Length: 457
Ligand code: NOJ
Image (cartoon, rainbow, N blue to C red):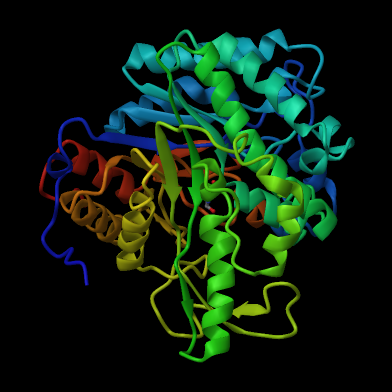
């Protein structure tokens, strides 16, 4: 067990460690039809009844588009020095391809300039799940044209912003948006088909490498990564069946995207899905193209999962045994809290020979925060960060090449299918008035980052 009882300070991580906070365009910007922005798949998906909790829409979100200057002041006040945000593809290319929207470019230029003025280092995520709806109409991530579309988007961004932004994350959690969006139907665009899922996987695996090459070519002095979700997979029992399905889930959740990016091709462990995927990979034709020499790998670990054999579930034949059922600590998302597991995942990703450096590009938790007398005393979130940061420090001390930690997320925002219900922010947002209130976890971070030992409560 990781001991987090003695408080650690940010100084323990060394002076070059990157401390950041992350947001994404679709979750924060709002202004969905302002200044020429085209609709994204999330705008369209949210219009379908019953898809988003309470049928809320991301149209206004946190109105970051209009409030970014004040929000950046908060980032600064909390003591972070890195600001991670994503570019809304349909804001810069409203039709996905074709004409560039000058006002969209102007917005990101001002955002970048403002970051630099405040001494915040911008990290751009190119794709954080909001494909232009115009491209979804043509097949979206499943289309054979995807690489061409993505290449154009990356080129525009690199040319427009690359003079000032050197840090790039090509794709955020490819497993997340391909599986939830094209197989499980739980995220935009709401597809449920293996025939869409498999090409989406392959296109995302290709796009992360192609995107890296484009940025490397166009941006002088670039530092390029891409971000993967990961979840340790535990078998529910020691039965051979449970162990076998846990291995299958491990391939999907932890190996499917990183291994091709490192030049290892798709993992191929006699799992029927992988065999199908390798149809795209005949004679290892694409192995080289899926590979890119990333400067860093972003890892995002929210929970481990426990699975057991279930013959009724297609393909994986596994079902999850939820944290609540197993009576282990979990967040209000139902996600198991397990900092030891986070530590093990850091070690595991670091162990790939071709991984140069890791950055934890997201980490955080949803708890049902309560505002009392104008304050949000989110002790549980503070405790969560303390546990996870202690685990990170332990891994770092043992030689894991981890270079930074970005908290998810600056402020409560649009949590995809959970709408505005699931609050992950260090800052509380009243979505009626857009009033921001720093939670105690935000104050805690400020003290932590300024290396004050005492808690601000
Ligand atoms: C990962 C995603 O990148 C982010 O958009 C999301 O809000 C968090 N996980 C929490 O679910």
